[in-house]
Amino acid sequence: MTRKITTIGFDADDTLWHNERFFQLTQERFAQLLADHAEAGHLSERLLAAERRNLGRYGFGIKGFVLSMIETALEVTEQRVPGEVISQIIAAGQDMLAHPIELLPHAREAVETLAESHRVVLITKGDLLDQERKLAQSGLGDLFNGVEIVSDKTVPVYARIFAAHGTGPDQALMVGNSMKSDVLPAIGAGGHGVHVPHGQTWALEHADAPEDEPRFHSLPDLSGLPELVHRLG
Image (cartoon, rainbow, N blue to C red; front, side, top):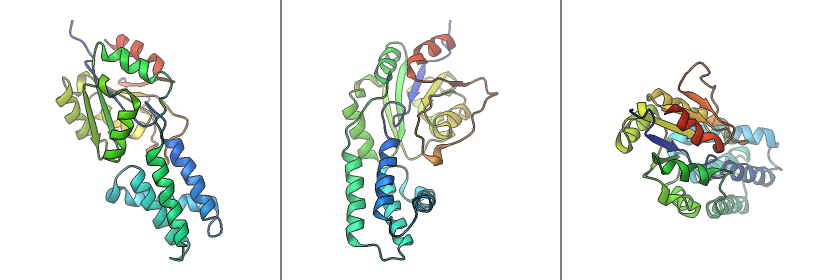
């Protein structure tokens, strides 16, 4: 019998290990630094606008986030932000880049179990050096048949990856916390998409679930993933 699923893609940040909470903690620190110049809610809106504006310039990840914070600080202070504040913003970004990796519940067990029977591929976006560091620290690196660090996750990107590392997107399944980046484009490429929600998700990653799509699946955590894959065949 031909197996329906041969290849499984795993997102990294907030699927296998914590990530977004460090962005939110840094954003709280940013709000404290600029408290004399902007109300926290307004500052958050300005920062999000800067991040959206800068995605095409800097891509995803901590470095682009830090540059967007600096840009926002300059805007809300009308170019009068103290140098010490800029220094602290940079230091906050460096702290994020040095933060140890903490795996999410069931992450190791899910990858280990599925690596015994399927091709498993890590598919993540963000800063190349930071993503490589996190994978190395996670202790999961040797389990993956392939690692793809991409500038964005789109239908053509998934089609290419699942053709290169597997038997094509129609026999592939992508697992992740982002409906926008992990689930919808993987389904668009012809594969299955499994949404494993995380309590903290970046505003720019929100999208509606394709509820009537038979290749869409949702799990509360990674513990049920091996059984879902087995059920799909």
